[in-house]
Length: 166
Image 1 (cartoon, rainbow, N blue to C red):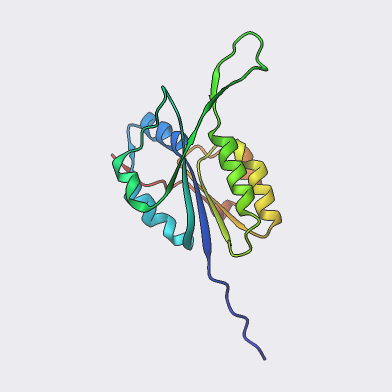
Image 2: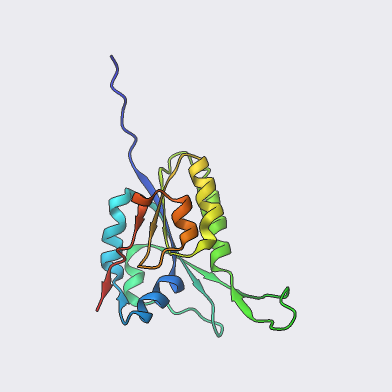
């Protein structure tokens, strides 16, 4: 009888910086990126980690403590929502960039887990593709994970435990 070798867990991490920072600020707290990094290691060896940050006023603001982990910083431009006739506003392309990167990583056979650090509904198509490709999907956020996400991600893989500083 042959023993089946357990596949080593290899994860990609996709972080929506504004999504998590805005919510923690609303709660009067600050994201603890050191503890977040340590927490993310529980999902497996981190092969790729990307932090998606919108460009505002021609620059991005990256906190010093985020630079220490080797995460790739992805600057996301603003675009006009031209389909809105009356109230045209600028919208960042963070979600689009996260989805495109994540879908690309779904094709990597060595990747076993996809960790999305955000809690909004825009990640549904990425999650569906990842699950189709037999990837385990984890959502790390705070208290307000979208109901839409809760319907497509196994409940045991939703973590409302984003490490914060008071």
